[in-house]
Length: 258
Image 1 (cartoon, rainbow, N blue to C red):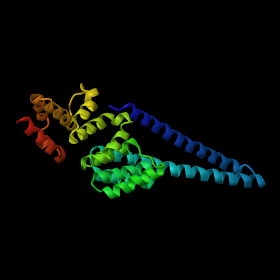
Image 2 (cartoon, rainbow, N blue to C red):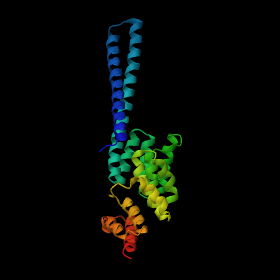
Image 3 (spheres, rainbow, N blue to C red):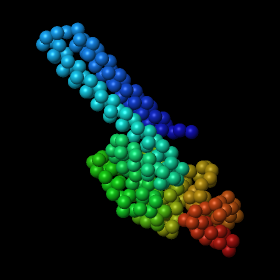
């Protein structure tokens, strides 16, 4: 189900595309009418009509050129986002690169940078992200902040991840995911009280993801609730986990069985 933010973005996209091609249609109609008008005039008026028709036609061509390029950029970016969410970073990077080739935007550059960063190419990714920020006068989007924070989180650079994740949490689309990751970071820093404080507003949220399960299971173990912790851990077999989480879950399982 789409969030309110996604619906808002979709509405903005539809309105923007409609306005763009409506302007193209108007300029094209005006150019056609001016060419018809030119053939009905003579003398100095005909020369003026010819120049005006040429100018209007050039404007229509320019609007059409940039409109098509911008639209193609949006299409490739949308497909890139689909590949990105599916975890196919190589395809996502190629699609974002094509999007930037059609229309060089800060968003396209930032998304290219995130693909490189998450693929482990830290220096190259940082260059793209810096270029995106430069186009926005030094600002990043919550999307970029969140996934840059995630990249640092999975690389065990929690001190770099924390400010980025906290900045991304202003966007409600990322607030819950940020909360879970910050809780894990606090647990890794031996600050279970801070982790419990972060998770306390979400006590009724069903545990369906490994980061949430890791944080809750750890807190239950510390509270002496071994059976409840073990039940949570059993929902996430080690064979289904990536190495980052597998080692953490294995340590918790060993602690729960002591």
